[in-house]
Length: 512
Picture 1: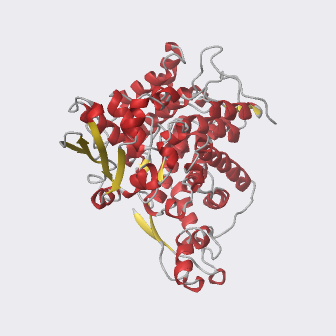
Picture 2: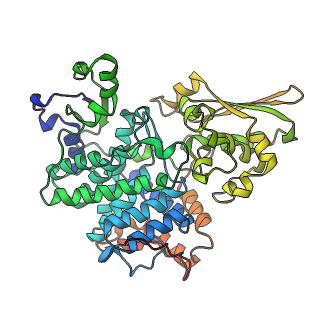
């Protein structure tokens, strides 16, 4: 990997495109290096993972609405929509929108955490939609997804968005555009412009994940995918983009990210002084392996809760009477404390009437239910009746989080063997006794007690789709996706999963 320093430059400097981050990203996208076998196998795993969580969410209101909008943009020879019979296809940007929403709705697909956080599986819906529409092969899709994952994760390694309250789709959309560029074999110039357009149109803010969290949490990455498809389409037609989008004097870095912080503290005239970021990218001929550093979720909740759910399961075995608990303190990282913990100072995270989207960002609620139930279910664990149970509310309100500098250090470690997202839990009983345990990574993590392999991805798929699709349809999909490298041009519609007849809810009427 080569680290590329990123600074802000005045317009008069006429920064050469060869020195711009977007151009360097486009170079990675056009590098024809072979996709290694482990990467190829993990891409297949993540396509299975995406389909599983999409079908599990297929009739939730945001997904139904997104599907209804997409079906208003029918296109012969277009892209498939999750759950819908294969003869019905839509324009690829709308398939990206509908399928991206379905994948994201349950917050249960893959994750990567570093300087920022991400769900790199959000790259799959738009790249797959374009691959189906443009009749590309399985190998083309694999190459496109390897690029999308690589560039998305590399940006997340280096550039923190959330400290500036920018939503993480600002890293996703450029990666999606680059992955589509690789898929289609576009020239570096075209991908360069598409990356810049994608970033320019996708800078949004984190209010979507704060306070009363709405369905936009699921729509945001789907919208990024739609924007990415549209950006590539425009640039294929010869259109350009604001440039340099990362380094310009009125760029995203200069006025929204760390350049803004620099200017606010030391004056706008100093904005050109620091090197703000060092973004690692593969060198020429270096394989794209970033997907192997990401990890999926066994439980339907924010990733920082995964290890703590597993820890709750373990600790409940040592507690006789949960009503005898006086207090629970979770010592954890800065991010967990301030985003999904009591450090967020968000009363809705303690509210039994809060939405599912809020509850899955409340580690206090999640830990209480996991401790009581010893299981986690993507529907039952968030049911309003479950959230409002009196004994759950009592236990939930005994829980607080505290930032521990050591857990924060582990959270940001660059050593994959030390990187940790869990915490240490102290449970104080009414009699004064204290039970203490800790867990750094979830059981399903590559370094966990039971790392996910192909068998676990298939089990997750079968569990989440049970009752929604026939055994025959599940078997057909699993056979097709595991044969992905051999799927020929025009055969990628096989990666859709179709519900049983009458299984899809209809959307409310809208404009489309």
